[in-house]
Length: 277
Image (cartoon, rainbow, N blue to C red; front, side):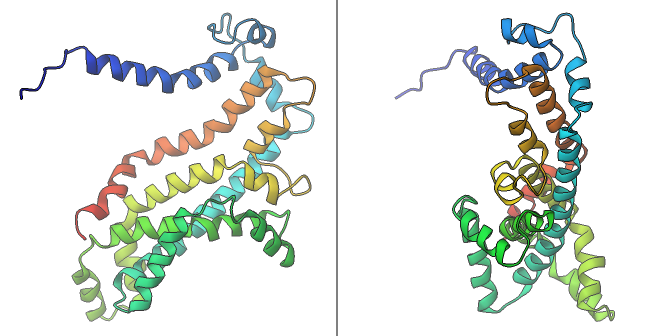
């Protein structure tokens, strides 16, 4: 049976349709950021003409400093979380990959099983633990939750990449008198830059965009993040859509810049462990 040849225009049309679906939300945000509030009410899909920066200016100059307070908290939580996650995940992934003990393999399987548990499922026991330790409604409690929940993903990425690093490099450094600590930090870890970039991008974006966990764990007394700030900017009976779109634009801008800076290592870090099992 002969295969029916496809028309040459099918693939470009499908690609264009898929691109349009994904580009539409981005267009709506970019168009309405530079549009006056009354123009948004009239037509949200029309281009911003004449463009204006009033929405961004109003967000930056709000009396309650909603954006600035959320930005400080989001940057603090994200940076502390991804730094601790990178260090712990790399060290644990290296140990589990190089260890020949059966307990190490079981531990790795348990950690990978943790990837299948949604954070909403464990949110109630987590809040109980944070209340018992006095870390509820604090930035430290939010960081501790992120580290505990996202370590399995970091171990998964690092362990896959470490398998592609020849063991002979570590053995040679050990024969030269280097300690295990020095072998890891001066020989192994510099080779993990692509995997580190992948972990930083994935976890940085996830933690930055997280909404439910900061809303519950931080609460009104613990401050706000940029994502929770978007929610709190919506009034019960009245909304300023211009400020809302401006706040969403400013909230997405830092993580977009962060991704662009590290994106050249992104694919290499994810596929590095697929070369050698």
